[in-house]
Amino acid sequence: SKGGGAVRNTVYQTHQISKNGIGLLVSGTAANVTLDNVTIEGNYAIQMQNSGTAVISNGAINGLAVGISVLGNGAANPATSLTINQGTAVTAGIYGISGNGQEKYGGTVISITGGTIRQTIEDGGAIYHPQDGTLNISGAPVIEGANGIQLCSGEGVIANITGGTIRATGS
Image (cartoon, rainbow, N blue to C red; front, side, top):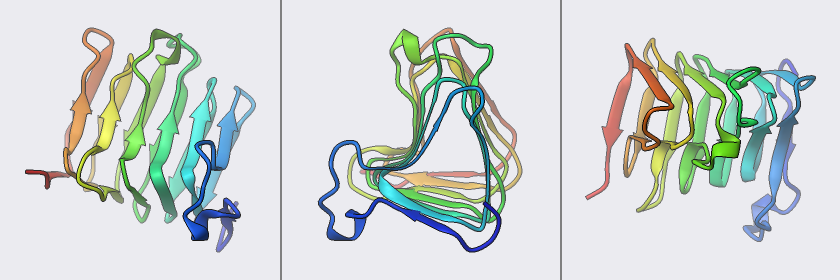
């Protein structure tokens, strides 16, 4: 989508979203999505899985629980791939961007070159990255939450951080 669109889970505004209230599902190698100047809302605003690809610029991604969930297919190739560019604001209660540490969900590449990733409630974090995968942060993004970035998988996590502001606000 390019320009001014919006995708909303229909019950988002009532705050009665089910556990699976997904605004946009990006699933499978054929799912190659470019979003520019789009608003997406839901319990999970965007869920990516099974080698889907998304590039987001100038967007507003609002999740009650999770802004963007990134689940791989258990293999590095083809990876589930997310790119966040300048002008994008990802805001969520528990995690701005979240993976899953189970082996079957490894194989992700998350690249953040700009924008804001913000987590808003007391517990959680801006980025939760427990899966085998690569996290690239460059440019001037602002990453802020009770915890800034949580990397917790071990040998399969690669983090390349060459820019940005990471701010932990929890006590």
